[in-house]
Image 1 (cartoon, each protein chain N blue to C red):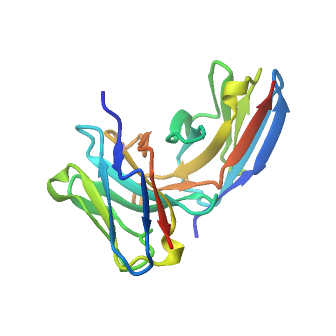
Image 2: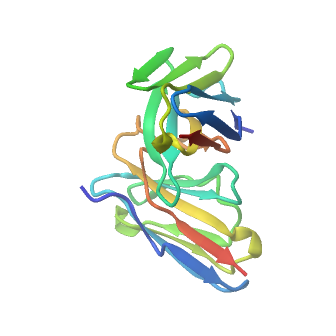
Length: 113
Length: 114
C-alpha cells in the first residue's frame, strides 16, 4: 500500500547547525509534498510544501528538495534555533483516486542552545 | 480568521462506551479531513469530505467509526463501541483549494480508552 518513510525519528543538533530530515514515498503518482511542524501541545502547522513540477523550494531558513526519480524528498533547516525544536512530519498526496495525504511517522528535532 | 476547532480537547472513556468528536473547519472550506495519530506513529488518514459528501473513506478502521458532515459545515466522528486500540490523537483538517490537500489542522482531540 501507499506509505511514506521518514528518517531519522529523532535528531539533535547544536544551535546554529543545519538539520536534514529525509522522506521516501512509495506511490509514484504522488504530486504534492507538504511538511508540517508540530510544537509541543500545539496543532501541526504547514511550514512549506513542494509540488512535483519543482525540484527545490526555499523559504528563509528552510528548504525542501524533491527527487521524483528516486521518490525522495528532504527538509533542510539552516542556522537552527531553539524554537525550531518540534516534531516535523513529511507527507505525500496525489490528485487521483482521492486526495488523502499519507504522512511519515515524524522526526523529533531538538535544538540545543 | 478562526482556525480549525476541535472539541473536546481530551476525552477519557471506558471500553465499550461511545464518544463523539466534533470538528469545525475554517468557514468556507469545502474540504474536511479526519486523521488519527496513535502512540507516536504516523498521522493516518481516516476520511475526506467534500462539503457533505464522503469523497474518500478508505482509512476508516472499521464500522465502529462513523463520520458525518450534515449541511457541509461541522463534522462529527463517532466511535461506538470504543476499544482500547482506538486511543490516540484525532486530528481534523480543512482546506479550500484541493491543491492544498490539508493545509490547516485543528489542535486535535486526545482520546484515551481505558
